[in-house]
Image 1 (spheres, rainbow, N blue to C red):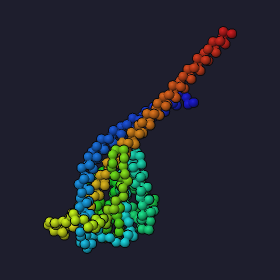
Image 2 (image 1 turned 90 degrees about the horizontal axis):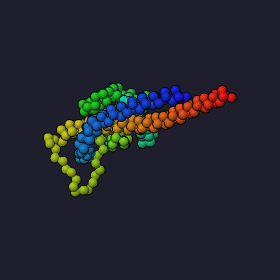
Image 3 (image 1 turned 60 degrees about the vertical axis):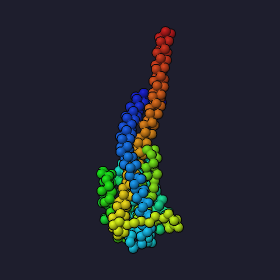
Image 4 (image 1 turned 90 degrees about the vertical axis):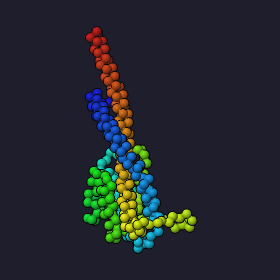
Length: 292
């Protein structure tokens, strides 16, 4: 059994760790509230706009919408979205695993490049053959989390759209954590480009659009902006998921530290009682020896 000093030191260490994890949990909870409000407000708008974009693309000829042109898939770009920091459970690892699954199954016959967004994804892809060498793409993808705004997200979307139009990539997929609640996130892989068009149907209620000012202006302005909003929504989703995952991880770490502290305190009490009993026995034995 460890001596009393070792156990006291361990209790002190666990108590310090518990205070840190508890503080990190509270910080993440505060950040989660803001991030959750942002994605909650954005999601309905982004989803409705995506529905309109899908239906609109199906009504346009391939020559009218260069973002929906299907071509043979040889070069695939996967945008992997993670955080800059760890201590959030399997949040970052799950995205990396999903990319590896896509690379070895759905896109196993393609040339794969990964655009890492977030320092953890940069580190995970550093020694793989998938890291993109395309200098025209976003130069500092980890910086997006330092100032997550629609403008900065739009810049990233612009580079992706330019790369697709230049035919450097035949398909662009975004892999990220979708926010469900503080304790649950789902890893999604969404096709960013080409735009998926709605399937043809014979439904009499099929939507017919009236274009104002013109179809050309709609294609020129609405579709790129819709794609920017779609990417920005994915970034907001991942941002909220990160704080939810970290809050949950720190909550579990605090609970584990609390349980460990209780076990150590019990061990300390047992060791202290054993030491006291041993001292009493020694005193009694010494007294008997003197009496004899």
